[in-house]
Image (cartoon, rainbow, N blue to C red; front, side, top):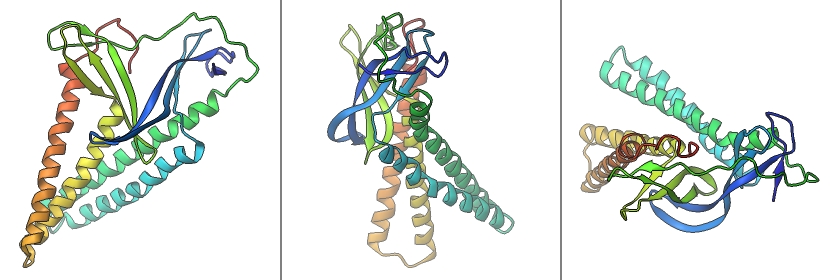
Length: 257
């Protein structure tokens, strides 16, 4: 068992309380499972919690490098929208709002993906430390089922696309037989970024169709992107509702996932 030094109390008493497998998938399309994708640690001296993802340093850096260009693109769209707002207020303000949202979400994505590296540095492995006696343990949080009963976690999968974390999905199974899945906050943020990008591409395609003599294929492309954007919005709203309203956490039933 891996023992790490706790950044809070400086004792070599932090041990892994849960190891979750990784699953390479996106928008429900799975392409296989892999090794440990996430390790939840808890210090057995002070009870502090932290998470380390089971990715190599270069792979962990790949995520922020992917999203950094979107920060610049969002900033340029924001400035371009504000500049054109004087002549075309609706178009300019809409473009500025989308650019600001894209830049803000990209910054959050970079911060989230760099987090495991920071935790690895703040809580290094203590190779010669003995395994401490177990004083604290983590029980995955239960959520309220539609029938009103608490449903425990039966599976947690750390999802990724090309080794870039795209969220953690928790599957809960109630004694009534119902099963439901809840995404973590990062999964919701990542999904909102994808939906926003598809939406703005669909809007630009639709705008160009009315200004130019578009072919039938262009209309099909724009319609397909619009349907994809609508489906993504519906899926995002359902996931947000599941996490915060339909299946809330049961009080005093474990730690936040």
